[in-house]
Length: 273
Image (tube, rainbow, N blue to C red; front, side):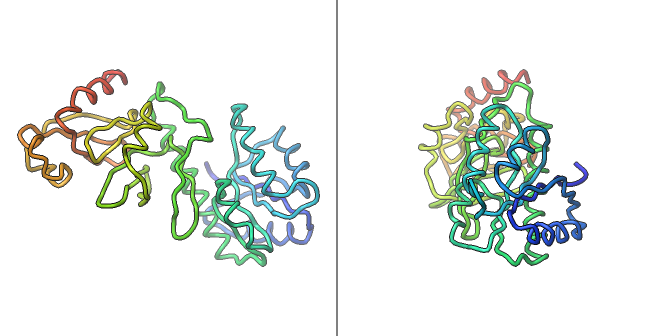
């Protein structure tokens, strides 16, 4: 990927012109405005024949508004078509919560500042780079998660959706959970037991404090009892025979309970390793 392909959707010609100028003035990350649309219907028609990485999307427009248009993009995923990321650009801040529920990468208010736009574009670039890395390294037989399968977290006061296909593991620490992807760690509320019940087909319980994506398990090794004591939480039952799994992309090791060793071996065998 050499440049972000951007579609600007706004019913005001001057707003589109100013936004195009801001985008084209940003050199990091590199961006290319591939088209403009004045309405959601125009954008929908353009997307039938073309592709882009990002929508810079106004909220209030004639006909379907930006929120409705973003919601309709789920239909592209159901049809197996790529879904562009969305950054809302609007004069009104009242729709921000709904925007993030729709998996918007960011929500910018007009007049847009160049520094703020650049930060939003950097987030889009980072997310695309991460997804590309996961797809490139993920085993061919790993289950592909539908676009609707995601975990909603709160990141610096904003709602953010993390696709399950990008999650390497969940780990319980004190009163919270850590969600780990190839490039980021997030702290979230919840219980491993609930996640295991909902997503046990994709995640394997390796220890009482960790669920690991089945495709992300790289290898299983026996280690000295003290090597992973901090992860084991001082479990005397596991201390005499310590095992750990290595996780892809981040090259981290997580402790494995003795009772879960057989399940981890089975998961590895299922990958053809």
